[in-house]
Amino acid sequence: MRLVLLTSAAAAVLVGMPIAASAQDVGSSFSRDKNTSVKQRPRPEYEAMGQKMGGFTLYPRATVDLVADDNIYAVAAGETSDTIWRIKPEVALRSNWSRHALGLYASSTVSRYADNSDENSEEYTVSGNGRVDVSRGTFLTGNAQYQSLIEPRTAPTSPSASAEPVSYTVSSLGVSGVKEFNRLRATGKLDTKTFDYDDGTKVGGGVLSQRFRNRDETAAGLKLEYAVSPDTALFVSAVRNTRDYVANTPADNRDSDGYVTTVGANFDLSQALRGEVEAGYMKQSYDNPLFADIDGASARGRVEWFPTELTTVSINGSRSIEEATAAGSQGFVSSNFGVAVDHELMRNLLLGAQAGYGKDDYEGVDRADKRRSFSASGTYLVTRNVGVVLGYSYLKQESTGLNQGSDFTDNKVTGSLSLQF
Image 1 (spheres, rainbow, N blue to C red):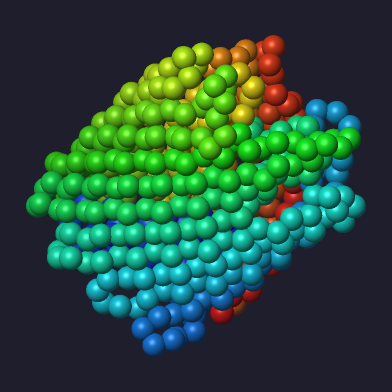
Image 2: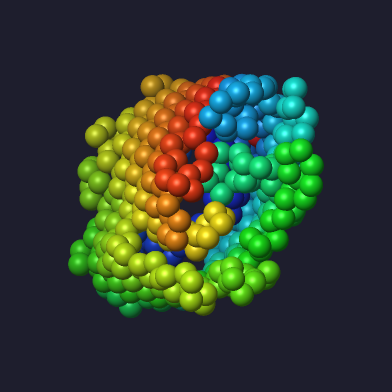
């Protein structure tokens, strides 16, 4: 069932991988499982059985999407509509051990456009995740992932001059360690990512270079939590990052380093709220003297409200510094806010809707982008092996300033059929 509900690649990874702390939270002051959201609630009669393979279980799945998109190039005028078929086979392998955990995941997404074959694409992801249980409250985790992706036309960094979607790869590695001392828990982590973009083709011909976007990102962080009660903890967090570009030039050196420091709380209040919120200060400093530092308030949070057992209301928000592709800009501050509602109409019929607002304020150039989004979906779990999803999404972007980006409105209607075993 969860494989049907969680349709994104990230969600599928969560299903296919062992949750790092799941075996460690039993009896812990940091356990946050008093409440269960609509999508998380177990439905054994609709969950995939999987194929037992010794100490592992294999979960194969395939999804077919039919998408009607009224603006596939995400442009302000002269919109082009098309029908897209997407086929996504995937497989997750998860350990069944009482201690430690190991998971592997692989998927591919093949997209075919009925009338605009230049937009056809193939994407794939392979990843692995593991956990070593050292002692009660102490464990180590590691993960590795490689993705070959296509940048959506609606992405704020997507070049409007490209005749074809930009393709790129992301390689990531991560390690973390958790140590719990009664009411105190310390979490350390180190993550690295490598982005490698392929050059595109300009509208009308010619090479559209994307090599300037290739970079390595590293982030190291420490989080200290103190449980003031079994359902509430306060914490401080500090994350240091470096961003090194491969193809720098003296006039457009984008190398930088920065940090984010926050204070916050996580909680799971019985029959009421669950979530984590944090706020603090962020700063990114650039090697290029022409690029001024970017700093300001940092924030991130997600809160779930459970008005009834059949309804979950989620609120999320963030404020962060992101990398820019606009000429003359070193980056932008991205602020986002969203609200989602999920309702269990029947045991096997789930409804969902979400709305979001985002704003990107660019540094170094006169540009600001605003985004408004809305989506709604219905999921019908036919059997434990078959699920059907019908959804609608709306996205509107407005860009202002002398160096403004694209304005567009995009509507999509999607029907999905999932088979899982």
